[in-house]
Image (cartoon, rainbow, N blue to C red; front, side, top):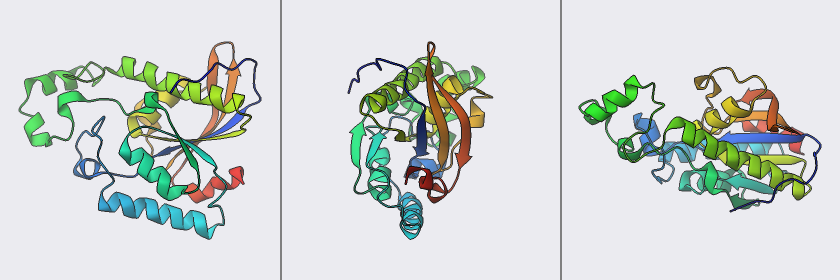
Length: 223
């Protein structure tokens, strides 16, 4: 999906970015990346618990649109949390591809010289048949910027995005006014960050970023 560019400087938007619940590979400590796995039973329990908290707080209907990654785990998580919301698929929010390292036992990877070489690079280089971090970060940031442009054009003041762990790190490390470290932007399953998105001549900047672990705690801002 492609979005038009914002024609004028918008008022700040409230941005809520949520990490999807877990799959089998997440639970085993494997690289998931572009592997299109469904939620595991534990992942389903995670998202159902979060949805129950949202319902108990009377906030089930406050989100009418969710921008989602095309991967199944993102769409499944959004469907349970916000069953009445429209889902807008954004291809650029797909998780980083780890190529041949995905969905593979770590004991097998440790025997692979290509994996050892990749670890030595700080995991920033391109895995076999995968994406390097810089390439991936440009793609993810372009996707989130396009979402914010589209939300402004649609007259939205709050934006909800369902993304993945590495995609969240990439966007906030590249777009936050206080970027910190890349690995510092970790998000728990069904957790994430709330920020104020501001547009200036350099593009969108995420300000006042606050992490959350319980989604129900932050949805009151969208009521």
